[in-house]
Length: 109
Image 1 (tube, rainbow, N blue to C red):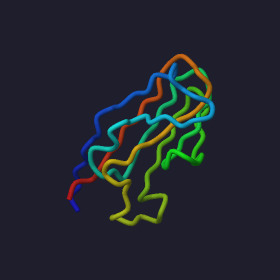
Image 2: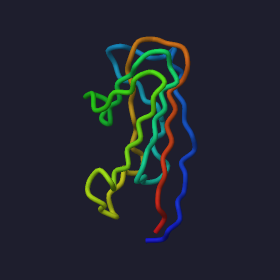
Image 3: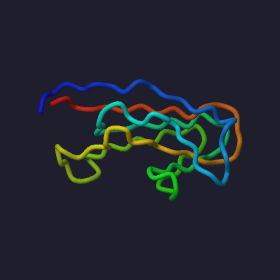
Image 4: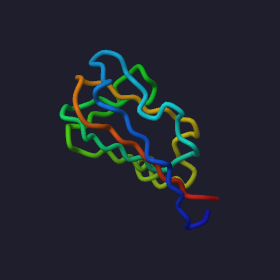
């Protein structure tokens, strides 16, 4: 494993398209590469729920806050742990103004 990190391209979701019942994809094409860390920034005026399967609520981000998931730290420093390539992250909440942003980071082999 190299000590080199590659970034995902920032993707954004307009909070005007939020739905309080149905999850909507933040990153419609999914992650470009496997990521060991993802960061979701809620710049909408309302709180949001995050889903990693588009069905269930997995995380909650209050308005103006940041969710950072370092999968390697979360599972005990396993160097192989990562979000899969093409992982789509979903959001739901009340229609709002502002954006929800997502980016990721991977450690290159």
